Amino acid sequence: MILASKAFLIFLIVVLLGYHLLRARRWKYLWLTLASWTFYAWASPGYLWVILLLTAIDYFAALRIEASTDDRVRRRWLILSIVSNLSLLAAFKYTTFAFDNGLALAGWAGFATGNRTWEILLPLGISFHTFQGISYTVDVYRRQISAVTKFIDYALFVSFFPQLAAGPIVRAVEFLPQMREPPKVGWAEIELGFRLVAIGVLKKFFIADQLHDLFVEPVFQNPTAYSQDIQRWATIAWAVQIYCDFSGYTDMALGLAKWFGFTLPPNFHLPYLATNIGDFWRRWHISLSSWLRDYLYFPLGGSRRGAVRTYFNLMLLFVLCGLWHGAAWHWLAYGAYNGLLMGLHRAFDRRFSSAAWRNHPAWIAFAWLATVYQLLFGLILIRMNSWESGLQLQASLLGLGSSSGTAAMSYVPLPVVCLMLAGLAGHFGAVLPGFTARLKRPHRLQNAALGAGYATSVVFLLVFGPGVSKSFIYIAF
Image (cartoon, rainbow, N blue to C red):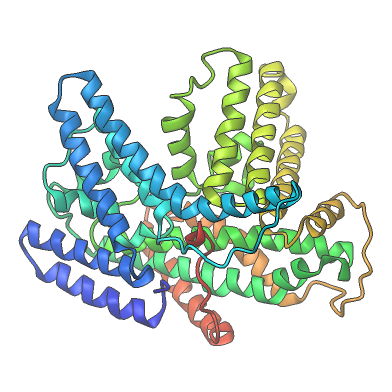
């Protein structure tokens, strides 16, 4: 069920009506939980048992952790929760990767091997809800939050359908306090929800999908058929596409949650304005970056155990971050690449931490441009169709390599330029509500911006509407 599809729209209306017509807390949450499980089962038929099993394990493990005063017992229940989540995640996500590489290694060693004839489908949002379950039991173990006593409350936290498929990764300390009583939904929440959903639809279906069809896919499919200028622009267009695709889902998730009265954490903050790689990861997929920091990097020792251990922790963190995104060698390379950049940045930052020239506008501009180039190199790794084509695209960023340029496209089409500019401007949609709230008369400006957004959405719908039905990129992770 794709967000913004007709089927989802009908589903959403039914769920909203039922939720707001019911009065008692338990019935509202039971209805919303059943709706979330239905959403999960619709997208992953036959896999409903996965989220139900993990929900039950984490729920009972947290109760036992809180009830026990024996640290060894508490640790055993925590380990059960972590191992259960990671085992199922690994089984579904990495079995085929390990099997295929085992076959390749056996063939290289001279053994006769066949081809894999089976496939494992990935349950919806398993990379996200497993991390939520782990963070919950860890927080209970750390005594940062009390264990939930009502099973339906915890089940709703894990399966809340607006963010179930692709985040943001919500922590129990952020969501559960909002559930003490069903949050009230007023006109402000309805308006903000509409605005966020409209922005998300615009980003995903009318910018990201069109950039993919019109420009990114043709060039990445066969980059050597295009000039180096076209290759460079296609790489930039891909950066705009993945931002609009992922942040568009986040905007829609935050907007849908508002209609139920819940506030989800932001996941992006102007990531392409970052001036170093560390700054970028504080702005991009914020819920994942902060999760890895708090539940992996810090427990590994962070930067408290010497320089060598710190660089090792950074590299391990980002290699695992790459593998979290996908079970493939190019994702592992992407993680290692970012781990290397983070290590180099840390060494540079420590060496020149007090240098006055780092505050000069010229240096800031150079640092921004260098960061953009670093990001584009990395984004090629996760989009390339082959290692050869990826190296060709990376070489074109530096003005190196060669290409035949035999394709008919010798310039960037005007619609593509407009879409790219619109996508980059979408950065500011994330800060518009806070900006207008600080003005003397915010509501008039907010209503005007909302009206303009609706009008723009209608125009894009009329021009680009047919065929925009691609799934979100991050749903596959």
